[in-house]
Amino acid sequence: MIDNQRQVERLIAQLEASLPLYAAPTSDLAGYIKNQCPQFERSQRCRITEIHYAGDPGGIMCRFDLDSADFEHEFVVSITHLTFPRRHPLARAITAYQKHRLKRIRVADTLSGGSPRVVALTFS
Image 1 (cartoon, rainbow, N blue to C red):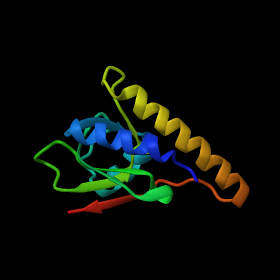
Image 2: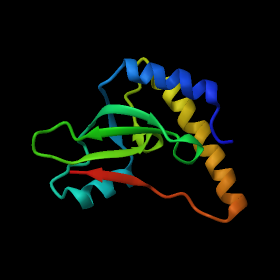
Image 3: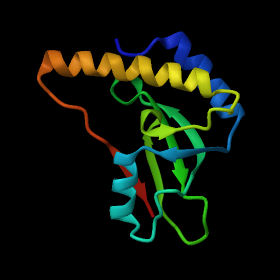
Image 4: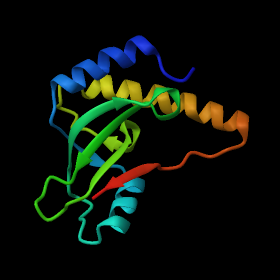
């Protein structure tokens, strides 16, 4: 089991109550977005419009757009591929979830011989 279910349920409820949220993509995710949308600037923020839970394999998933009329794509990624402003009221809870999840994934990957990857879904 990767996620702490009580922590996830509490965080999802808080995230949903705060929608829309704004975050920045990690560098790996920014590279993926740039491949899908060449006009994307790495400094651009993401507007999160939906939160879902994909169980242990995916964790907390965020559906977002690029907060601009110039982009028609929407993406769904794990919350671990996003960074949130430190002053956001949920920043500590999000960071705690991300650290816990990434640590557990690294342990699972080490045991299975795999390596973590960025997985994102694109909608147009």
